[in-house]
Amino acid sequence: PNQNDPNILYFGPGVHRFEKKLSVPSGKSVYLAGGSVLETALDCDHVQNVRIFGRGILYHGEYGIKIAYSKNIDVNGVTVINPRHNVVTCGQSQGVTIKDLKSFTNLGWGDGIDVFCSSDVLVDSVFMRNSDDCVAIYGHRNKYFGDVKNVVVQNSVLWADVAHPILAGTHGDP
Image 1 (cartoon, rainbow, N blue to C red):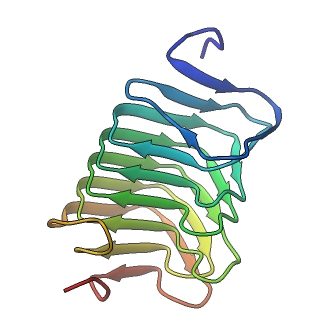
Image 2: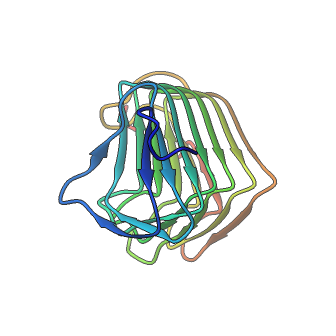
């Protein structure tokens, strides 16, 4: 993509450090070029039509990518290494595609993709080696409310060190 495009947050090769999470606005794309390392978390909160893509690395943020109360989010091709919490959290969102994601975690509770109260979520062609659950699907938990509908996980390699490749519905709040 054109690094001068005002609708693209472009991170070229090299290390890019942020003190705080990086909030992604509606209608924007985040591009991580091959050879780029972004040391932060990406936050898609109350947004729509966001794309996060490229061959770069998200490294050791508080979490990898948070998608909360959002619509039409596409994550494609990035690698997430050792976030302190989940690789991807998808909470009360719809129309989320996660494709060709690679993740590696080694910390306790280092989940891969956690889906809370969301619908129309596609996880396709991912490789995950996580210290905890690779894909966990939950109903209500914490600040997320509602049903979970139409979550598809396909064509993926899920390697959980101490928990489950896929966990559905065993946690939640009453």
